[in-house]
Image (cartoon, rainbow over all chains, first blue to last red; front, top):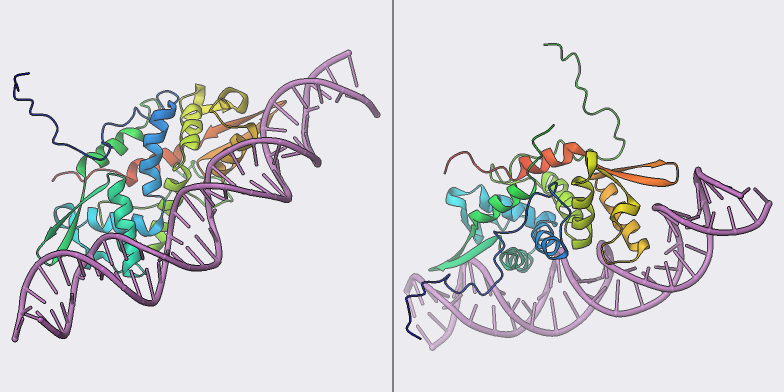
Length: 123
Length: 123
DNA sequence: CGTCTATGTTGACATACATCGAACCAAGCG
DNA sequence: CGCTTGGTTCGATGTATGTCAACATAGACG
């Protein structure tokens, strides 16, 4: 009843991608874990999206205006489509600042993926 | 310095997936690099394939008989189909030993993927 | 040989996806 | 206002993909 200041996670409408799964080599993934991991991999399973993601990730502060990265050989609507896909997968966030729209890499995503591919110590 | 020759890459006649690309965050990928990276990501962009890959990778010696991993909720031909995809992508190799066929994780692949999503050293 | 078990291949089918042009919103500027 | 530039959404279209049932192949074994 009394609102004891539940300062919760601020309403993420999409599913959180970051806290995903153990390393792929640790144990067989469950169906759910596989679903989550596959969603991330699938988002990067297109050359155009890899180029866009890499362009943003390697840009200043991990963010870039669409205008800076839309030279990947496809039409501008297609670029927008792919950016949307990456955003839906939780890999990017976007923000409009005046005239331009900036996309930014979700930092936790890289950490989550790094954990996924983590190698077993014994080599 | 007794490394007279590299011992890791003898004869994969299919496209070598291992020596792929710099980290995604280092610089914008070229079209070719993106194509290579996307092929790897795409191969793991399906939940069934993630489960199969994880089951094999986490198995003894990074290899497993098909019979040990085919319980992923789809029919046997579908399992075979996905294993073939993973093999074509260079993530797995297969070998027949008597009655059973064993699939094995290509170790260099995990290294390549780890390099791909390597985090920038300092922010 | 014949047959059984373990996998792979083929054909068919429904769904998903990448792509484009055109139409549409949003912000700045005259 | 109306124009211009940046970006997204929509509708259409061709291609890729996941899936299964049916058939094929490869060893093991009697």
